[in-house]
Length: 304
Image (cartoon, rainbow, N blue to C red; front, side, top):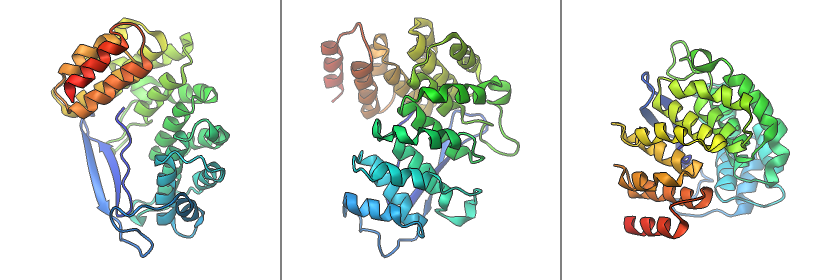
C-alpha cells in the first residue's frame, strides 16, 4: 500500500503489525558502518553497486547493492542475473545475525520488481520464493510478482489465500504477523489483473478482515479487477479512519486503483499533502472518466 521505504548503509528497517492490526510499528537498528560505506550524501556508481552485489562474502555489501539497483531502475545487463543469484542465497532466518543472507534475498526480490520488463526472467525464482518459510521473503516476492504482472503467479497466490481470513488471514501463534502476507498477496492479484470469477471469489472474503489494512488491500484489488463502484466505498470510509496509518494506506490504494471519483475525498483527507499528491497522480496515471486530467491536475496544484 505505502511505497517501500529503503535505507542506505547504516540502517535497516523492519516492521510488524501490532495485535489489533491497523497500526504499524517501525523498528530501526544501527548497522556498523564498514570501511567501504560512503559518507552521508556520497553517491556510488552503477558499477560499484554491481560490484557490491557480486561480493557474496559480504551480505552487507550485497544488501546495499541490491537496493541501489532497484532504487535507480538499473538497466545494466548484469543487474537482473546478479539479483536472481542474490535471491537464491537463502537460509533459515536468524534475527540475531544482523544483515544476513535472507535480508539480501528480500532486497533482491524488491529490486527485481522495479526492473520490469527486463526482470521477467526472475519470475520462476520469485515463484519459488512464495514457498519460503520466511514471511518477509514471501511478502517481497509477492509484491515483485505483482509489479511484473506475472500471470503465472495467480494460481499460487490464490492457493496461499484460499483459507480466507480464518486461516491465511489468522495471526501466527505468539507472533503479531499473519499466517500469510495477505496485504502483499491481495495487492499482487490486483496488479496482475486476472479478473476471473475464481480470483474475485478468493479476494472477497478479506473485505471483512479484522485489520483495516487488509480490508483496504482487498477493496483495492476488487476495485482494480472489477471496476465495481461498491468496492470504492470501503476505501472512502477508511479515509476517515482515526489512525493516520490507515488513512495513508487508503490514499495509496485509491491511487493505485485509479478511482477518479475519489479525487475530492482524497484532497480533503487528514494526511500529508505529499501522500495526497501521490494518490492523485495515481488517479491521473491509472484512472479513466471524470474528473478529467485537467481537473485532477488543478486539484494537485491546489495542494502545492
